[in-house]
Amino acid sequence: MVVMAVELNPQQFLKLTQSDFVLVDFWAAWCVPCQKMTPILLACERELPQLKVGRLNVDQYPHLTQKLGVQGLPTLILFKHGEPVSWVTGFQPKDRLLGYLRQKVAL
Image (cartoon, rainbow, N blue to C red):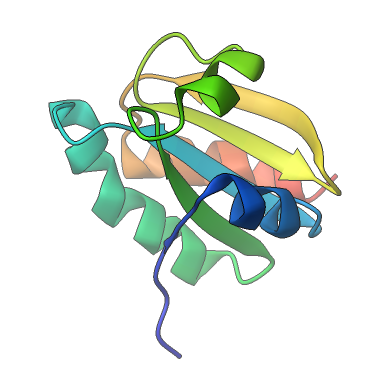
């Protein structure tokens, strides 16, 4: 099974976040910590089969970013059935993020 975070536009964002557990990475190309998060997010998606990961470029979709209150990068928001249930801002090491997500998707 190939796992790959989906690059989202606003329509894809609305559709994908209706699923059980979706982690959306709000990122920008110029953000070095955002680039470092990509392999960590892919590893989390591989290790947590119930989790889907999507990425939304804040420079391309500032309206959606502002609507959700994203102020720092990277920001990771966990959605369940279209509702944001948890968020984390800043670079997260794999072990910390994986432990955090395991707790959240077990609820």
